[in-house]
Amino acid sequence: MSDLADDQARIITVLQQGPEAFPSGLFTGHPDRVLLGLKAHANTISHARLVALEQTYPRTRAYIGAEAFNALSRDFIELPEVRKRKLMTMGEGFAGRLDGIAAAPLASDLARVEWAWLQSYHSADVAALRLADLAQYDEPGLLSLPVILHPAARVVEIDGVVAGLIPELMASPHATAAILVTRPDAEVGLLALDAARTGIATQAKNCGNMGNLLQAVIETLGEAEALPAVFALIEAGMLARPGG
Image (cartoon, rainbow, N blue to C red):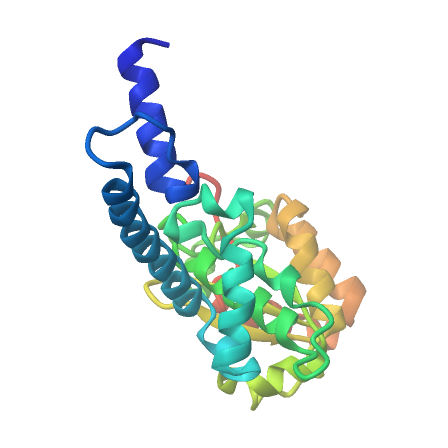
């Protein structure tokens, strides 16, 4: 590495990590004045990271309380692997830090749903398969139609009580075992899944074509319930066509 590259790397490290990474002799001027400026910079970075977590997990923050959330966030953003991240990915793994909070036992599940929401929001723009798209196929063509799990789709298994903390799911007719997070268009959507539909949504990533998916649905739910379940999953935006 050249001298310039060495200097750039050291400066970047200081910008990322703050005063504690300050190498002696890197900057001209009195060290105390330089460190004073770096401490102000470090406070700015810390504030930005805390705000990024608050924006990633607004419902989790409301659930556990601002004070408790802030304390957990401050510990989290100081982890070495977290300090290297961009703000957009700052919250990855935060849900794991929420396990075992006696006063907020559902915090970890709620945070995982919010993280899935963010990942879905930033996923690739791909046209979701719609029910209207199926009208152009005859029976053999429909059964052999290649399908994949939409890149924005996420299946988050949860404690069913979590659904009561999410207004969009309170009217769900199913006992919730998981939440399907999708973004078929511009808006992220949430769909409560019972245990059987969770299994179907999980299998969808490996079904290959519509015939295999229909077989899995019929075997799981029976013929009478298969069609409404398929309709609901397709309309939620769970599927796409390869290359779409």
